[in-house]
Amino acid sequence: MPLLITTPIQVRFSDVDLFGHINNVVQQMYFDLGKTDLFKELWRLTGAAEQVPALIASLNNEFYEQIFYGDEVVVETFIESIGNKSLTLVQRLKSNGKLCTLSRVVMVCYDKEKCQSVAAPDAWRKYIGE
Image (cartoon, rainbow, N blue to C red):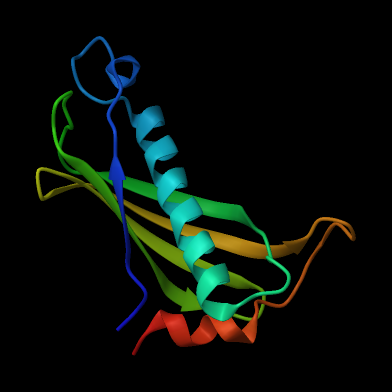
């Protein structure tokens, strides 16, 4: 089973737009919180001496339902696949248990000192599941 990280979201008053729902741009910030939790857990599980960062190369969001202030909101994040230098994450934004937004993100492992992509750590591969 893949490593699934669930991140509870505290919806702020400022997240609400003029239509009374959580703005799509704010939802992307919620997804970033999920990514942060996933990578912290990966680094912890793998005992990574060096925390390999990854940059977003591509992202796609599909919006299904609105989210409103006062809803119970969580982000679920998992690694769908991993290549030589990149990995694809799937993130589900749920409100009161219902899928509202689905995000698929391709991230590239990156060496910030050399300014180039690098191989994805082999230790990450076991966390993509079956």
